Length: 168
Image 1 (spheres, one colour):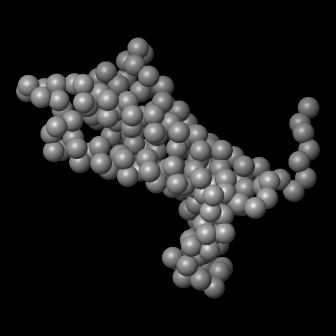
Image 2 (cartoon, helix red, strand yellow; image 1 turned 180 degrees about the vertical axis):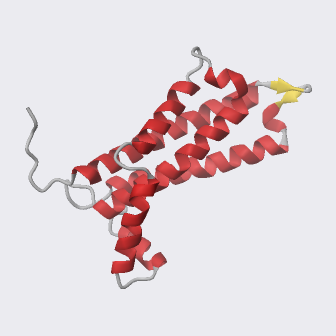
Image 3 (cartoon, one colour; image 1 turned 90 degrees about the horizontal axis):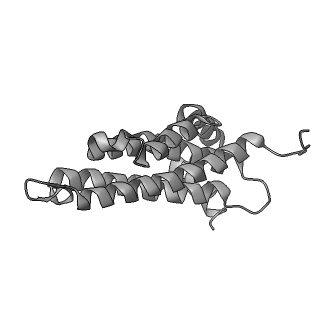
């Protein structure tokens, strides 16, 4: 039997929860990829020593850090209910990053990344599922944009106002 939750914004809860799930899975995908790149050798050295691979890993690290921060923003706040705009920002940012993180991880792993024995495929499938759950970035970005346009702030001041009042 469904539980009544008067005043609860289920969309905000779902967005914040899935943003946190994406942040955690993205971190694990990055850790697996970094370990693989340090272990896998080609032409007599670890593939993680090649500049092109290092560049891809640095982009992944940046996206994972952004996901971590966004996941915290989604749940930071004063009350028991996640703020809809903060949750929207968190979900939009993590959903956008999820696709790039998954694609880069599979590009660096090659065929081993899709085998049943290796956990990467489990994590990236979840990233793609969670990206769409409770709205992808295509759903949440207009919510954030409309709230920004409705406020008297510039875009940067709007983001500061939303995140500063909810700092962990």
